[in-house]
Each structure stands twice: as C-alpha cells, then as structure tokens.
Length: 398
Ligand code: KG4
Ligand code: ZN
Image (tube, rainbow, N blue to C red; front, side, top):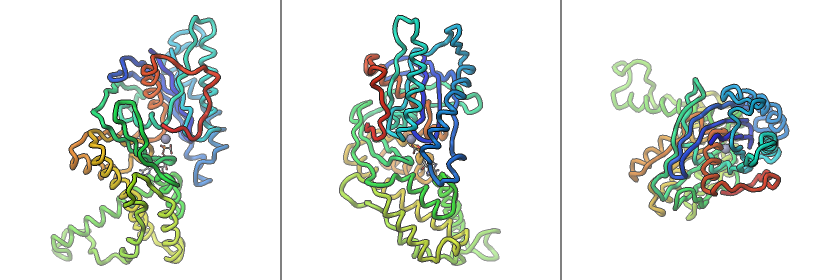
C-alpha cells in the first residue's frame, strides 16, 4: 500500500510517501517521495524553538512540501493517479499547536481523497517516539531522496535510548513493538541541556552540534598531546604537537561538574542541575566575556562528558538487568559522536546488536512516521480511530 506520512511535532516539517508491504515482523519500504523543511534559521534569534513561529512555519510549509512530493511521486489529484491508501501523522508528543497543523492537514487530505470512494482513506495517528525507535531501519539516498529498506523484528529484549531536545528515555521492549518506559528525565532533556549550555557559551541554536564539535576538537588535541608525551615531545617529537602542560586552563576545576543521578538506583535522569552547574562555573570564571575560545571548548568537553556519562552508565545497568540483546538509539542527540562511540563500546562489551539511525534520520522526520504508521496499521489489523477523534496530545506516552 501507498502511505503518506506527516511530521510537525516541533521545528521540522516533513512529508514522505512510501510504498509499504509485509507484516510487522518483516516489512518492506520504498520511498517514492520525501520533502522536508528545517526551521532552525527562524529560531536562531530566539535561542530555541519559538512555538507560535514554529506553528506558522508548519502552516506555510506543508502545502509547499505537499506540492513537492506530489511531483516526486507523480501523484495527480485530478486524475486520481497514485493517490495514497493511507495518511499517517504524528499526534504526540510535541508542541500541541504544531501537532495540530500536521493533523489538520492529514485529515483534510484524507477527507478530500475519500470523496467518491467506497472506503474512506484512513488517518493513522503515530506516536513520535515510536517513530524515533523505528528510524534506525530507515535508509534514504541523500542525492535522490529515494531508497528501499526493510524493517525486521529484532532479537528481544530490546532497549531503546531516546535522546532529543524533548526526551531522555530508556524504553524496554520485552517483545517486538511493545514498549515500557523504564526511566526518563525528571526535568530537562539532554538535548535541551546541550542547547541551554551552548547558549551560555555564546554558541548558536541548536547547541548540540556546536558543543559536540568543540568537545571533539579538545579530545583530539588531548590525544595528540598525550602521544607527544609518550613519543618524546620537543625538538625530537613530530611537528605541531603541543605539550600537555601548555594548557592554561585548570582542568581539575572543570572536572567539578556533576554527573546528575548517575548512581541513583533507578533509570531516571536529571539535567537541570548540570545546566545550573555550568552557569555557576562560567560565573565563577568571571563571566562569558572573560573566557577565551580554548576555555569555552574545554567547558563544552566537560559538559558533554558529564551529560553522556549517566546515559552510558544507566544504559549499561539496564542491559545487565534486563539481559538486553538489541540496543536502539534514536532522537536528535543520537548523532552525537561521543555518545555513539561510547554506545559502540557497550555493544562490544555486552556482545549485543546496536542499531543507530542514518545521520539524517536522527532528528525529526516524516520517514520514521511512515514506518511507525504502517507497522501500527498492520498490527491493529487496519483498524484506525474515527478521524474526528484524532487529537494533538502534547504529552503522549509510549
Ligand atoms: O529529535 P530532535 O530533532 O527534536 C526533538 O524532538 O527534540 O532533537 C533535537 C535536539 C536538539 O536539542 C539538538 O541540540 C540535539 O538534538 N542535537 C545534538 C546533536 N545534534 C542535534 N545533541 C548533541 N550532539 C549532536 N551532534
Ligand atoms: Zn523528536
């Protein structure tokens, strides 16, 4: 069947059309069309997502993207050619006013296409977080926007780590497509902490990629400087190596950042304390104006280490407790190099399968909504709620 999917939960607008077939344990997908719009540049002046503006941007961009996908998929409404058999749309969690834009658009399309048909085009409400979990199966060619992939049931128990601007969750799937949240953040999400700390350090929104870039740079420098020591630095060392003691920043001072909830007995997380600790650290160092680029990069590194360590620690704890066989990482922060590196180490240590999304599918996208929508549709034996009962649900749980 042909499925059109829509994503508008936050600051990304996306529409995808896919041909999907097969059952929930082995489904095949072919991308027929895919178009998206990121609102990052609109929100930069606000240092974060400005909901009313995001809603307006979704309303403006949905018809434009729809026009684009109709061309890509050679869909003709006039001749009723290639009309999708179902419309999937994110109904939560997310910003309700943004979710409504996608939901209303989806309903209007389904109603329009249903006119004159014997059976109505179904609207499939999709949980955005299930989309992030299933995003690890998606594959898209970036040049053509097309691609083919399959979703195969993985060996359970499966553990999903969902890390984004809105979520930090560990989800246990004892069985395929069954979800149980075993732990989540009590306050800020890890991506949100990245964004807020980046702002404190004078870096643009979204802060995750910026902090990651600076932290990786310092890690590479530290590695190089350590190699310089072991190989004998100075005139006989290779060119360009710096001595470790040439660093003017007191690293021991920076190490003072807390690892929030790291040793709590549950699988909960907390990021507001870490964020405040960075704020005080900057204040105690004389304010942002007093920090040079190198110090800013070192704070970025120390913040990243402090933010990721509890995630790795608790993921390892959950792996042991639930005898996990497969680990999935999804959400905007899933593309973080340091997190991926540490997760790969865990996977090796516990001999389990690690599934990471294609970089372009880590953030919010409509392709993952199409995957989750199709699988849910099949799982529910093609039963969908009455179209008028589908509502935006900002705090929807898995
Ligand atoms: O999933 P997503 O696109 O939207 C939400 O549903 O929140 O995630 C966006 C979040 C932002 O907080 C952004 O800073 C973070 O993902 N992010 C990163 C990286 N790339 C994006 N965080 C850390 N490292 C990255 N490389
Ligand atoms: Zn998301």
